[in-house]
Amino acid sequence: MEAIIKVFAAALIIAFTSWLSGKKPELAGFIIALPMVSILALLFSYLEHRSADTSITLAKSVMVGVPVSYLFFMPFFFGYSD
Image (cartoon, rainbow, N blue to C red; front, top):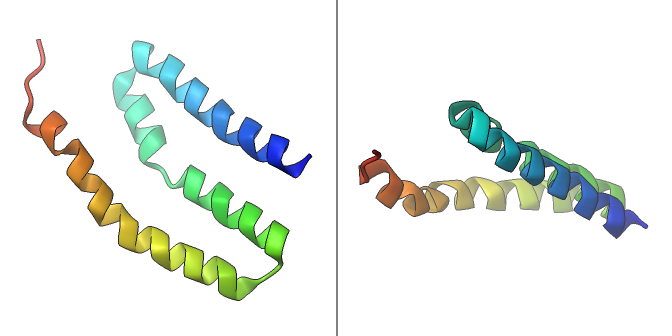
């Protein structure tokens, strides 16, 4: 049951921002940039494992991964729009 709730929460955020991107792409981008998914993952991890150490390790790995993920956006930053 927990897995279903986790998937539903993440899917709801993704579906909402996908819908919103057609109407207000700037707002959708801002919402996606918020660390909502990371916060949900930290919350679910703590609730599942009841370990602050595990949650801290997860948070540190997210902090390391964020700068690397910026590389994905480089083509979009330097691209042009119509």
